[in-house]
Length: 225
Length: 216
Image (cartoon, rainbow over all chains, first blue to last red):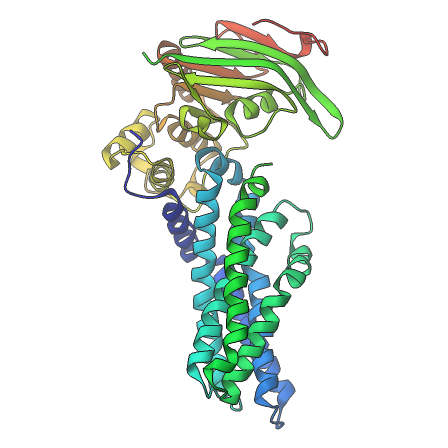
């Protein structure tokens, strides 16, 4: 009876996706956060024309805080609904981790694409000169952010002060990623050659691999009790 | 019938320096049934959670084997069906969607018609496509039974089995308990006097003195 073509991880991913489409719990909050933040930035800038280097930093600040407001939902929702024990009863920890990571990647990719398009459209001085650097930094930054946020969300989901603990705990862990991704984005708006951004991109790739491997090894302990 | 062996030895659980119970030892084979009883806070639910693998004991061991093959702690859940108030299903999904999700996560090859048959057993087939949030507590409890029996587990753990159920639902549960006794192990945790004698053996946690072993 134990034979099915569906892997448990993909089933958990599909369940989370379907649940999100029905409830729009994280998506609505994240979209509203991005829209209001960009609107506030527009008001703050007024008639000024900030340097593109500063705007590339502001772009990732928006991405960081929007991730902080929504990516923890995948675990917190299981805790709040009381389904976390049921999931622990039927699924192996690594299947849960892989399913939740896939969901956070999907959420983060769609959100960051939306943010990049909206930001590029309304902030007139934010012009990408080297799309290859921007694309590589965008992909690696998004994946790294999703990977780190997933394990941090699993850790804080059992705490009483989830909302405040999440960004506080995330900041030091995400700092190396943020510094490198902001630097690489800055080079993409300056039109620097790809070779100049290689150092940052290598840091981002290493961060992604290290964070995913560590999360994979740690998740068993975080998930059980 | 599958040969099952559940051997618990010297089990102890401590929460924040408070000893819930200690030195519980018991042995169960297929066709054995056990009622765990005791006052509120005696550790009935904790003991069931430990047996299911949801909690680790502070001390002691659980050896579980199927057809004389030892089953590791990480795989024990495959052989256990568990109904409890703290095991919730997804409210935004229908009963069928819930069962289908758990079927996929457990890696079971069960057809949609079998899922419908399972729901029919609990008089839920007609409302199988409606979201669980529209169900009463008793109906949700019935779906939990369908969830627990989905993989035809050789071990069935029931915590407060008749809570929220009407007379018809309670009869259905007692039939499930009797069926399970024929083909595996059933353990019930209850403080309901009527349910004490549904099983062949009784473990009263109130009567376990610290550091003493009570054979069941």
